[in-house]
Length: 65
Image: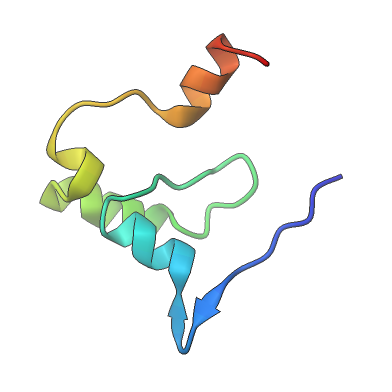
C-alpha cells in the first residue's frame, strides 16, 4: 500500500540523477529502474561508491522502529 512517484525538474528525473551521482542507491525492492545509473556510479567511484558505506535498506532491517 505505497504510492510510488517520480519527480522531475524539467527533463531530469531527480532520483535518477541522485543515483547516477552516487548520492543515493537504487531501491530495488520496488523498482529496478535505476540499476544502470547505480552500476555506472559504482564503476566510476562516484559519491557513496568512492568509499565504504552500509546500504540504508540493510541498516533499516537491523534497526526497526
